[in-house]
Structures are given as C-alpha cells and as structure tokens.
Image (cartoon, one colour):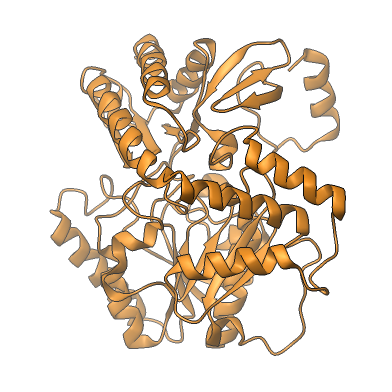
Length: 428
C-alpha cells in the first residue's frame, strides 16, 4: 500500500478498522496460493483472506461461474425462485448431517450466527445463551454480545443473557493439567453447575476449533458429552462452522464430527470458504427449528444468483478434487514440520491444529506469558520473507494463524515452513 492510500484510508475509515503490518499492504491480484502487492512483490498466502479463499486465488472454475452468471443477471432477491440457490442448498443440506435439513443463506458468518441465535431464542422462547470462553462469533450486536474474547467484544450491552462455559481451550486455564477424560468430565460438571443455577437456556453456541481465539480446541468428544446434558434440558446445540467447515481440518468435513458420538448439532452455521472470496454465509437447521418463526422474512442479498453460482462451483471443485484429503495430507506434513521448528525455538509454547488450520502460540522465553509483541514482529518478518500469515489469541494476540488455501502443495508447504522458521528464529 502506498503512503498516500494509507493516509486516505485513515481519513475516511474507522480507527478501529484494523490493518496488518507497520506498512500496510495493498493486495492487487492473486493466483493459486500466491498474491501480489501494489509494488509487485509476490507472497505465498497462508491466511487466505481470513480462511475465505478456501480453494485458490482466481480459481478458473469459480471465476467462470461468476462471470457467466453476472452476464445473465446479478440480482433478484429471495422473493423469486433461484435455481442456483436451490441447487446449492440441496448439496449443503445433504452434506450437513442434519436430518430433514433446511438451509437459509446470508451474506456473512456474522449474519449466519445472528440468524442462528434468532432461531434458537424463538424456538426456545428464551434469550439465555451458553457460549464458550475465548470464543468469537461475529461483529453484529448480538454476536459481539456472546463473544467470549475481550479483544473483540467492545460492549457489554446485549439483547441476550450469556453464560460462559469452560472447554474451548485445552492447554490453558484451571483444567489444563488434567487428562483428556478428566478435562471433559470437569467441563461437563461446570456445565451442569451453570444449568443448575438458571433455567430456560435456549442454546449452546460453540466453534469446534476457536478461530480468532488462536485455533484452540477441546479434546474430541467434549461437545458430544455436552450434548447429553443439553438434551436433558431441551437446549439446542449450535455449531459455528464458519472457519472449520468444508474439510479444512482434514479429518472431518465439519468440525462437529470430532464430537459427533451423540449426533449432529441442531443448527449449523457456515460462511467464509464456501464462496472462495464471495460473500456467502448460511444456516442449516432441522425443519422444526428453521420453520419456528411465525412472521415473514426475506434476504435481499443472501442467496444472490452470482454468489450462489460461485459457491456451487467452488463446492463441486472441492469435492471432485478431494481437498479435504489434501488438507489432511499436506496439513499433516506442515504441522509436523512446524512442530519440529517449535521444539527448538524458545518462544514457541505450542504448535496446534488440524489439517490446514494451524496455530503457533508465542510466549516470552522461559515463561508461560503470552508475547503479542513477538507475534507482531513474526508476521512482519514472515512478510519480509514473502509469506502472509494471520494472528489471534485469547487474553493476548500471541498466536500465529496459518490457514492456506486447501489446494496447497507439498512444495509450497515446505517453502512456507522454511520462511516461518527464519521469521521465528529472528524474533525469539
């Protein structure tokens, strides 16, 4: 980004609209797993527009679908039948694992979670929500109100009453030293304790892997154990799959499937990667829940012909090219390579994640204290080396977030790991 454009940005856009880097970057174009800036510098992209460019930059199948649909008609609204929307909904409903599923399309993950909260509270006639500590669910008034991460929750005002449950972070907090089985048992006890002090909770909303929170996750089976308790009280389970969906974790198509022993969630939300950069979000719910609203509703831009064409083309490409399998194979190689680096780097506390969803947590050497300054310096050093990564974390933004497009090759994974190794050694 040129200094002039940065100055213009600051003059007309909000102060709280965050930019990465001391010298903010203007990305002008991309291809595959690479992007270029306004100065012509080339970067390997390991963040994909916050996990949104899921398959590849300028994927021909998606750009062709967008171009052809835009040449026919761009917008109609949900007041009219939309073939692309029906076809994509049929595929998503079938893939969701939710019986008798209904799908509602939105324009973002925030709007999808907002809709899920509306459905759950209307269905249960309650405004009480359970959320996970260290969570993030979006930018709207209701989504901010249930976010369990202070850095992304600018107000305590909310239309909802929110109670926060342990379990989203395995390696920190009061239960960190327990075994996985003991950890799950302690979190279930905590959930029972909370429910014993309230009544009429509408739903639990949870990310199977917490995205903004630094790619943290509980042991497999935690939400299945929660599910047993929730069912005793008639409480709904909302799986926020905005970042974990579509096979990114490698092992499963949806993050909830690592906790699927007691069946699928009642409501599933998705967004980001399905559009490969187009603005698509959505909600899947069993018909009884989705149809509980007793007033009319539409979506002006949700399910637009162009975004639906993009999502359909992108999903077909993902399935036909087994990108879930690629995430498992290449992601597995990448995380092991990074763990080897972390084992010999003093400031790396933990390398965690699954598939192509990896977090590197940085601390001050010799301590367990988060080091957000080191994280900021690391992403600067990675950029200088030709690699773009993200950052996140709970109490402090001290985790490097790595989530490349799911077509990542072994050679590109090795290249990115080498750049990250140099960047980490330069700041530790």
